[in-house]
View: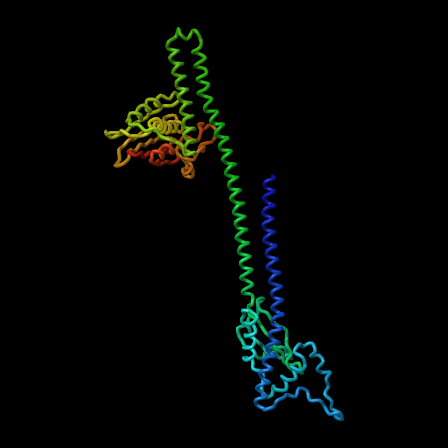
Length: 447
């Protein structure tokens, strides 16, 4: 329960970090937008003033005048005084009355050119390190509509900045407006880097949580499997220990010496129980050493066919089942340089499984044949077979494929032991099985 709460809190923390970063980016965007809007207001005013200066110089060259009359003062006795009150609203316009007066005065002979104003605007934008396309519009105030524009590639978007409407005449009929087209490229690069890094960091965190959960799930499953394995191990070892205890108890009685046959039978039971325990312990130790990388083989030269024949005699006498074991081989030299005890135990495991997972009548076929560079041993039975969806789990350690009630008990390590030993010999193992029709295990060992 605590782990789940910590997990939820961790995920919530990551989400809060992402949200806070998104809010920071959005706030940065808003502040940048306001700053660019103020910049555009100043730029269009500066460009218009420079345009007035240029047009004034052109006007002087045309008229050869040294000065320009801005607002002619009316005579003192003239009843038609200039009404300055109509200019008072232009006080809000930072261009001022003088700039507007000069522009209106020279406009007749040197009119405003939108391309020249656009060029001036572009120069000012570059000087202020604003990398953005732009458009200068002349807008008719009544009704409000663009009558002239320097660029047609202007689309309405949240990434377009509009400057304020700059009045350029006393009658308040014409206005200028600067439009910056997507001036956020550099900002987006910075924000993009922040967002991408945050996204990658979040992905890394989520992957870490996922990997941690998966590891915990695997450890939990492994713990359950191991606990199950230890339970089965104790159960399996209990049987030979009990047999050995009973046999030794019987042998300890003074009257046992009078019955030689019974004494030999109890000695045989003791030997069989001891051998059974020894083999099971050997398998467990072998798998443990293989996991730790310290598993070593004791090589010796022996005849594999002879060992298989000994195993046939051993497993042919099963009390509760009718067992028939056939050995098929082409006369050949079946000498092999390998670990005799481990290979013998591998074949014994396959025979033991074939008998366990078969019906009352067991038919096992063992085939030996010499190939070009290997020796092949096949153990085929007429048992219950293996389901297709479980074939890839057959050699997994601690895995028992048949766990239904009444199924044969076991460690779940027999086949994984066989695979470990065969691969340690630089060989390989193959499995062919069909449900209800039996299984065939084929060992390929270097000759």
